[in-house]
Image: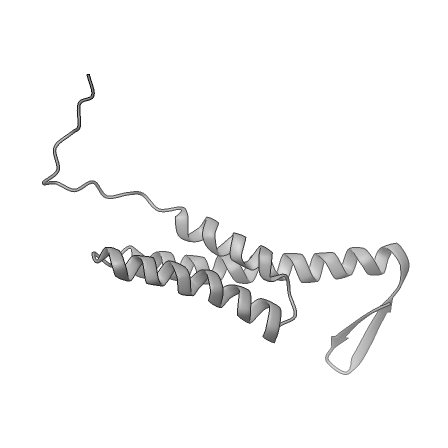
Length: 105
């Protein structure tokens, strides 16, 4: 059985509809949380030039989104991590102006 707390009332659903609501809230909520955290990290990483800082930020975002979703909000931590990775990885790479192209013969 599924119970959602909305204000003062509880909504109860059982069976297939309860399962569908549970998946939609747990999975969709985790994905939305992950995308929001990933987008915020994307904005931060876009301003960083230090490779180690970008790496640490990526690790903190991945684990942090999982922890917040799973432990505190009881949402899907796996989908939160996936959403964060997709949103954070959706940035253009900035080529180094000092680098020269590598030619393989």
